[in-house]
Amino acid sequence: MKDPEAPLVHVYLMPGLAACPDIFENIRLPEDRFRIHLLEWFLPEPGMDLQEYARRMSMQVREANPVLIGVSFGGMLVQEMTRFLETRKVIIISSVKCRREMPRRLLVARYTKLHKLLPTSLVNNVEVLARYAFGESIGKRLKLYERYLGVRDTGYLDWAIDQIVNWTREEPVPGLVHLHGEKDAVFPMGYIGDCISVPGGTHTMILHRHRWLNERLPAIILQDGSSI
Figure (cartoon, rainbow, N blue to C red):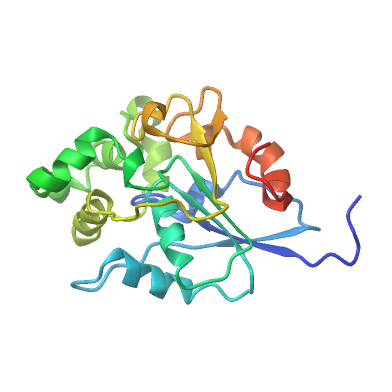
């Protein structure tokens, strides 16, 4: 039973690469206990690194001791936001906790600069953009995903890919909770350390496993440990 004196827990949701907040449209938390706030990407200024971007994004968090939940690249961002915010809890979904969890192809890109050759000018091709953002072909779901991929700016995509490849975090944020799909093709499970494994979950499980998430997120947020 809910404690009538318990304050609302403010939960900020950060979408993944190129995605808009609509990806959270099926995420539901009990309204008598939680208040959801949606964050969204803004275009970075020239020369802005991920830490400075995180500082700017942190200014949009108005409540004390929030819960931050980030998906994919958004999971990397919310970890950097902890440099500027005191948080109740940080949860990442379909993401990585530090450089050691990066797949080898991204580590190779960091040193070879091959990511600079990616055709980001094709961002208006939803099929291409989906491969960047979700790591999969969208096929017959083209119209569905077109609604979720709201950031089509080439400068943003160039910047985001560069920040992912060159992310420098060596150690996870203390107390961080990591939810990861067993079938994630972008960040394969084989590279992932301590996490809560989601059976059948892919990199897009925020969309396709929302019932699993809705059933478990309230307890994950409120518990003291990092497993459930």
